[in-house]
Length: 362
Image (cartoon, rainbow, N blue to C red; front, side, top):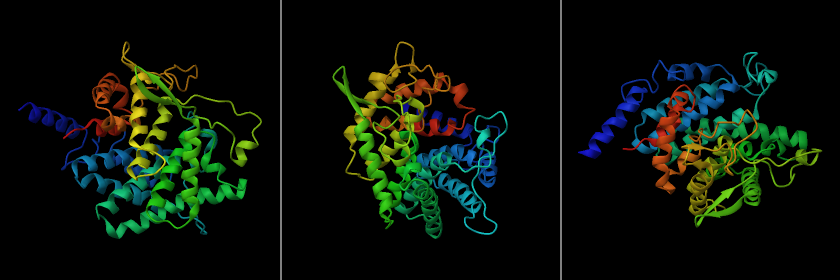
């Protein structure tokens, strides 16, 4: 009886957010409703790709837990809209450029394309394609999505080769950016893409990340911390920099690294194992989480940042860290407490559905 009541309460939570079989996938009254996100997907605006990516991932997670195809159907519509707005190398060429208001910190990039925002979105397009291929769904749509995934990676790979003679742009300056593209490359390689630069990109990423991970021990538990910057300037672009100071990985952007590693283990990459994921779950328990204050640190080493853009962002754990729950049962209660504590912030953010999907239990 206890289990039945618990399931009913959780289901009501999702129905109230629009997660009901007979309702829109998102409540129309939320800031990131399905209707709002659909309009975003048609706007040809790269800035929206962050929110759209989180939405795809939340639905991918919900399908994996419920096997309800409504989640995948919503994703299919969003992906189709985005791919249809991009027409490369034609007379009427359209590009995914940034379009934001003057008070947005990205305003200076208006009209420019964004390798960062595109990566946020397409890692979860790869995840979606993997799911529908594995489950033999939407067969007539798979090739066009695969082509779009390849197009996204190849565009920036070609730009980088032309500018720098290597994959400098895709590796960028921080792990969290390259992690998104490493995930795209990993999916493409897994799906049989013949071009060798997919495999070489994510295997080089693996090597760089392994070099950066520092293993520590607390209370007998082994865990990892790392810098968001590479140990050494290894790309042509990085080698040209006169200064490249080390910066500890912040929790919020560290999500992208965790997401990549979970995917690598799922696809049975030889570079990573469940033991690595266990150590990363220990990073949460032994370093990031502060039980006396029921809060997360800003950085993976347990420190709090002096950088105002990073301060008090440790609660943003839905894009990667929460996905470690299956590897450590202690995390379930911890993340639910974090969700309750920050619910007012979460419900109005583009991360809301990711949070709910991660703590959803049948």
